[in-house]
Length: 223
Ligand SMILES: N[C@@H](CCC(=O)N[C@@H](CS)C(=O)NCC(=O)O)C(=O)O
Image 1 (tube, helix red, strand yellow):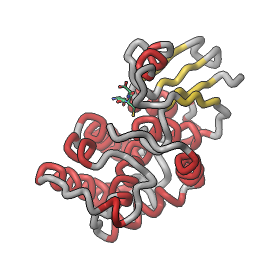
Image 2 (cartoon, helix red, strand yellow; image 1 turned 90 degrees about the vertical axis):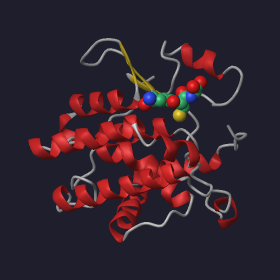
Image 3 (cartoon, protein in one colour; image 1 turned 45 degrees about the vertical axis):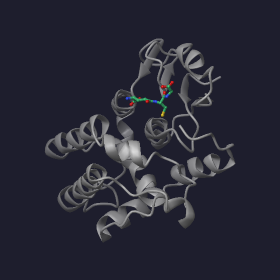
């Protein structure tokens, strides 16, 4: 068994789980996954065996640099990963870019409630028929516009050296990857910069691995 275990939800649906999973993949560290199937009567009890917060994802660290440790909340897990494996450069090196990265990550973590509620992550919901059911509210449209504004701003100011928000892949991209899937799955119109960014997220080998695994999962009933 690995010294690192990431406890996650279904790959097709668990947007919060995708974030630290991508971050951990970017470090190249070996880790085990434990997947808890969501939306069942026993789901909560199973999650509580790993974290008193009762939510996924959870990172369990055995030994390593910091002894035995359980970390929860996707943003905190991503931050721990970036700090523990600095060679992976998962935070921008420049202090100004890093401050903006932390701002946009926090904005994602704490906000975009309407977007999350109305366009839940469902990676394989790609058919036009499935998309017809979704007409975003004004609030969700504002969220969608703000996400694209963030992407344009970061790509324009800090992203020149690569395809991601701050050039190379960082935990800011891990935080926004689930939104990228939502915009694609629900056929949301995007500006060219955002569209190219979403393509870059999908082209990541780790993202392709996650999506392929999501396609093999049994669908869950609607929430
Ligand atoms: N703010 C948390 C949210 C985690 C969350 O809501 N996780 C969902 C899965 S995507 C969950 O655990 N649902 C199961 C439940 O609430 O019983 C984070 O960033 O990790």
